[in-house]
Length: 110
Length: 111
Image (cartoon, rainbow over all chains, first blue to last red; front, side):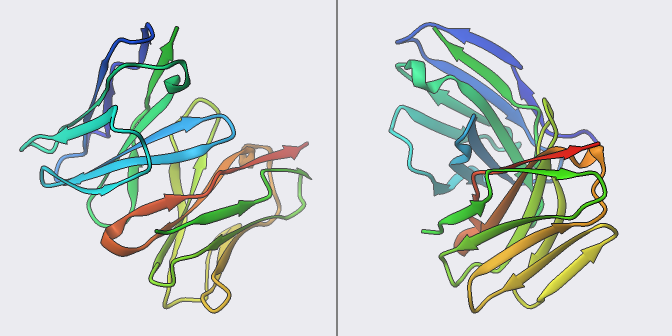
């Protein structure tokens, strides 16, 4: 069974640009969550999608948005990038309780 | 919403000693508490979890205890080995299956 796949693995963007990250969950998993990981801040919850609907949302500005498609694949978009957005972005898919994480996308904003 | 606090942020132990990581949560409706281990450069992976109807769960050298009254739960690792070195995250799952993670504990096992 294929794991959670995130693309791209690495990304370098300039301040003010926008970026789209992709996450393909494990087959059969309908829930996809996104997290931002920075040193010292742990895993900050961004949002969760379930059956194409945003079910939960963290405390991030509106520049961070996401969506989920009918095949459960999810995308996260960050507009007007800031230096502070540099982080590892992890997505996790789940069927019930256990979250299975992808390898993450390392975003660097310069 | 749920707030999960985790302590300590770093922990160094000698190989063979025990390690204990503690977490507290705020939402009394939370009923599922997983622990994840993240090795350097790798993704977090579930190592053990506990539900609110259980006070303790053990899996070989790792165990988790839950005190619902005090709203805290702990991870215990016995006979630590160098491969236990990693960052450990606790989490609480409350309403609408929203999972809130702690800030992580960097465990270093000194050979």
